Length: 622
Ligand code: ADP
Ligand code: ZN
Image (cartoon, rainbow, N blue to C red; front, side, top):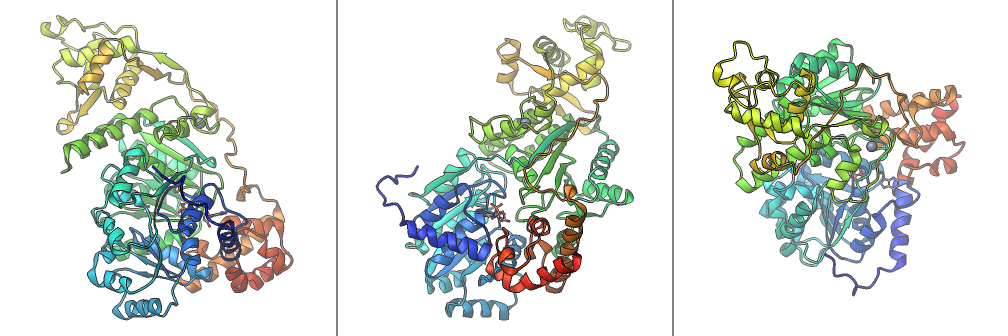
């Protein structure tokens, strides 16, 4: 950890200049959260690791010091989509930014280097592969660098969930550019991943900043799948999206097939749904991403191939048709909703076949046994949260080390606290039954055995001590117990080529249940369909739905204007202005450029470029 007590605090003037820049270029009134601390460290030339939640404003943490310090700021970023977006947004703000990626022509590359050498570039984005090229390093070596930022730094760690081998080479930056301060930023990193980032990137004396993972504008919920039937799940997803018609969202699916199927089902229901997965070539994926960014109320139906680096701020919901593989991945994926701070939802569908599938997939991966075991544990922790009864964000934030996190008050658990039934004894019976039956049968057959209903039961079966001992629970209650045991990793479903069988899970955990050291509780199923509970507004911000007539008309006019500007320049609309900025403009209705400049998200670059046009749109809309 930081040994910083001896260092001199950075001059207050430095932060003052940073704040001026934030106002002038980004149009934001002041820093948020840990931004000033992180920026002060970098301005003072020191290394930093900053763990800030998605939407927490990580990019200005390195962009501002890179601009204020002399020399070129270098940003290492894992994805072209991410680079393109950030560079476009910076250019719109009047910052001299460029990217070097594999898609660039030789001429364009040469032009970038020329600009860099002439001192006409403030920020240069590169991929780790690009940076690994000796000629890139040679050229960078000739330039004064202000700062090196490593975005999505958790990719360096094999304990994390987005491991990229290329990131491992970034530790060399320490020797290649010894005097240059380096900053690693990420939105997800538990202690182990953090340690790995510090070690791999050789950030030995870095000050570490970890912000709260709270995302108060997100309303989270999890829904147990009624059956393993794909058609049922698809229909449930269609219903959920339909209820959110007119909003932009992301639906995550576990497979390419699933993606295509769900996208089709949504289109059949009249939703503008776009499938996206790694089975498509890069050009096709780019076109689809562009459509998602440009079209209103588009729904992206995607595998995890989609996401990292997609900074669309106005995604209003993320639905997992199939759950992710860990709490880190969960938090990152639902974190793509509501980046603008306005209310948004994260809804996860999950079932026992999903955890079986997740574990099976891990089983087949070629990786170190210790790493594999860590991944299996991560999957179990995710399902335990989904099927648990603890406030969702509280559970995740505790997992990330925020032990004092309070219940969020808006998730499904907080909104409608489930009644828990203690089922330790039935759980012991179920585990014993699976064991006595030789781990050869599936859930239905095990329940038949417990309740003494097996058709034509043979003497060997009726002689077992577990035969018919489960009369105290209904069939549905038994299903819930067994499913929950799977979510907790006490039972494992082996697909057995289409005839799934239950086996015992982790022996130490099973033993703890037998001994009564580990209590088991399940959520009581609702008696009948729950009445629709009034939806609480999760955010404190202006919401587009709640606008009065004239404000709505101004907002719509501004959006139409923005769409045209975006199409002309081939950039996503939010690069011009984000929804929340347009909402504020529509609500406040500034009469002149000065008033317009006071709105968050309107810096001088944008004011010069678009100020007059925005005022004209407002005048027309009245
Ligand atoms: P992330 O941490 O997810 O990379 P970004 O850097 O993309 O987040 O920032 C998320 C959003 O928050 C952007 O729209 C950005 O302009 C905005 N933002 C960043 N810093 C501030 C601030 N100090 N005040 C207001 N908005 C900010
Ligand atoms: Zn909650």
